[in-house]
Length: 406
Image (tube, rainbow, N blue to C red; front, side, top):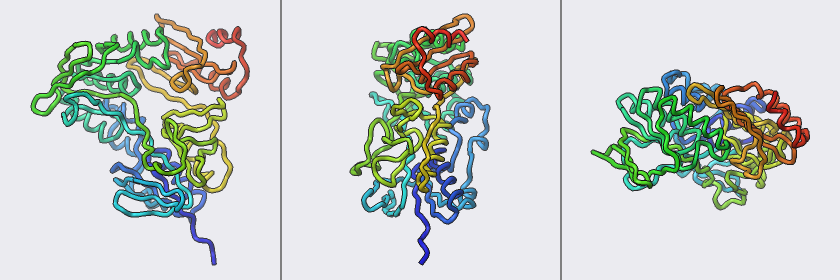
C-alpha cells in the first residue's frame, strides 16, 4: 500500500507561514497543508501598512493573496481560527472550535501581539489604537479623518510610524517617550538627537522621560492624557507603540524551549522533533553572527518560511542571511542591519554623525567582527556592511574608523 500523503500544519498565515505553506506544496504536490490564521484576511503586506495610513497605498494593494489562490495552490486555509494547544506527543493541534488536527510536521509562526496601554481610564475607552494588524490600520485611518490632536506613546518603530502618519494627516502630534531618546537601545545620544531634530522639524512635539499615568475620556471616547510628571494633553486619539508579547501560549505544556521567542537551531527546528518555527517569534541560531538572533522583518520572515519548509520536507537547509529592517523617518530614512544592542548590550560600537547633512552611522562589533549597523540618511555604506558581516572577517580596533570613512 502506498504511503499516505504527509500532513503539514502551519500556524500563522503571515509571510513566514504563507511562504512555508506554498513551499511545501511546490516541493511536494501530494502533501496536505493546513494554514491557520486568527485574522479574517489571507496574507497581506504589513510593510505596506504605514504607507496605507498615509494614503499612499490603496487597500487592494495591501492584500497579497485571496482565499481562492490558496485553494488553487492546494492549501487548506482556516481563517479566524486559533490553535489553543499543541500535543507534541500525540502530534496534534487543538483548535478553539474544539477540533483536533493531526500533523507529521508543524510550523509555529504566530508572531507577537502588541502590548496595550494599561493605565487607569484606558480600558474600554474608544480612540486608543495599537498598530499591528490590518484592522488596526483601517480603524486608525478612519479616525484620523475627523481627529485634530493625537498622542503617541512609546519609543519603538511602531510609535514613530504612528507619529509620521498623524503628522502626514495634519494632526497636532504629541509624542511621549519613556527613555531619553528614540530607539535608545540601538542609537546613541547623537543618533537620538538627530531623530529628534527630524521629528520636530516635521512638527511633532516630543517629550522624553514621560509615561502616561491616566487616560481621560468623555462620552466613552478619549479626550486627553495625564503623564506621570503631571503634564496634561488634550487628544482625540492615542497611538500605542509599546512593543510585543510573543504568542507562545499554544506551546505551554510541551517540552519546546522558549526564550524571548521560540528557540530554534539554524534549520529553524526546535528541540522537539517535527516542530519548527519562523518569523518574528523565532529566536534562531544565526550562523553569521554565531549567536541567537530575533528580528521581526518581512524579508527575514519570508526566508524563514522557505527554509523551514525545506527542512520539514526532510532537507538539511541552513538559514543564513543578514536580517535588515528599514523605515522612513519623515523626510529621511533609517536602516537597521544585523545584530544590535537591542538583543546584546555587550556589543562594541563606533559612530559617526553629520548633523548638518543629517547622516548618521553606527557600527556594532563582536569579537572583532562587524555584526550589525544602523544607518540614517546616507545609505552608501549598506553594501559594504552586508559584505563584511557575511564575510565574518576580523577587523582590528584601529581599522574600524576607516569603515566610516568610506
